[in-house]
Amino acid sequence: MNILEQIVAYKRTEISLRMTHKPENVLENSPLYVNKCFSLKEHLRMPLASQIIAEFKRKSPSKGIINDKAGIVETTRGYTQAGASGLSILTDKKFFGGENQDIEIAREGLQIPILRKDFTLTTYQITEAKAIGADVILLIAAILSDSQIVELSKFAKELGMEVICEIHNEAELQKAMVDTVDIIGVNNRNLKNFEVSLDNSKMLAEKIPSQFLKISESGINTPDDIIELRKYGFEGFLIGETFMKEPKPAEALNKFVTELKEKTPNPAPVNENPEIIQPKE
Image 1 (spheres, rainbow, N blue to C red):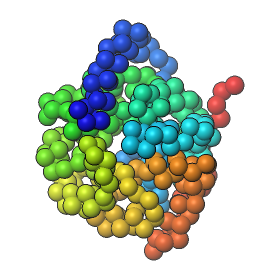
Image 2: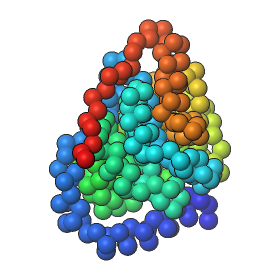
Image 3: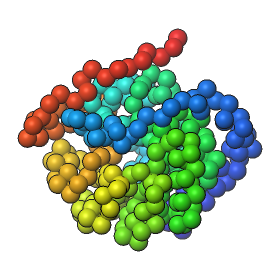
Image 4: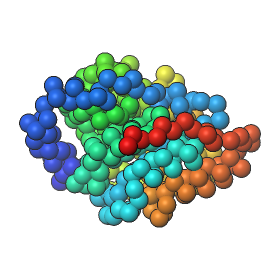
């Protein structure tokens, strides 16, 4: 059993327990459940956007502890101020050190799209994502059937959320190409052996229909990587470890965005004065 299979097996048990502890009707009464979602597609396509989806994760199965000192409030607000177009927050606790409360805390003070990064297998988890303040869900084609992708993406759209379907190869792309998927994300990390190569994005780029916004995930370490991937039509770049391995992830992003602007033919300030709502006392 590879790590992905282990995660899915554990997740099924975890979901059953969560459904018992907090049924869907309770989730639907969450104050955040009625909020209108922010569009990640719109934020990625804003003029002069950095197109970076900055990720907050404390650990991973392949790297172990990445950064368990950085605070969720300081980091997510710092990411926003540094010019992130969206946030990705891991909520899996056992394997990635996250929790639902991380999104609830981040949502309190920011007007920016938040992706709930988890292993979505059921509609319950989508209801849960909406209830904690997420705007976008992730569907991983490697762990879902064609019919599950259709069912789950349709349910998310009914809740007003956007859907990223993550793929690793052409076979998974075929499953991901459904009308209720907004964004196709090419993961450059093989979830079975954790090898990483940006060539995976380059190889699959032209096979992704234009109706889907394309993002590249994992293995993006420098501004030059983004500049190169943009040539292949990618409009979003999910970056986590590059920033999280630094003591102050938001400062690392700020430096990254500054360098990216300097290397872009027509650089311009990126979201230098984002609207940030101060959290309630």
